[in-house]
Figure 1 (cartoon, helix red, strand yellow):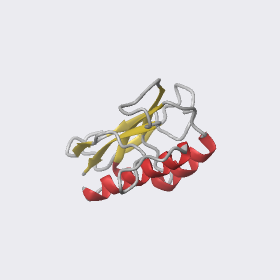
Figure 2 (spheres, one colour; figure 1 turned 180 degrees about the vertical axis):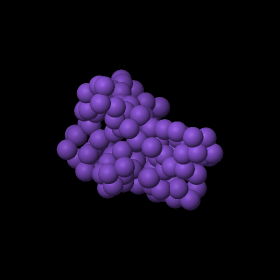
Figure 3 (cartoon, helix red, strand yellow; figure 1 turned 90 degrees about the horizontal axis):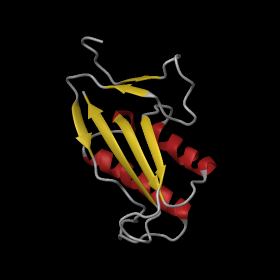
Length: 133
């Protein structure tokens, strides 16, 4: 993998395929600049948190897109996604929003269902890591 010039996403054939839209392995070239971002929640531009879960999902992904753009990055630069949810995710809806952002480029991903986040009205928080070459 010497002189690798782009992020590489791999699903080894030595284990089962991913159960969702993610890659088992993401390889980042050593020349890349790594970005870590605080977890994003479903606030709108005025800081309000909607009560409807899928509206929080929409806002969270919009906030992630805005955060990436603020650094001159795109979803293609995302290498890792961590998702925490206090409610069961509507995967049909979530996958649609996921694909709108990632457009077939699936970063590594972890999801956890938990009992609470920082504020009681927050139902989902998503953290992304990115790498730019």
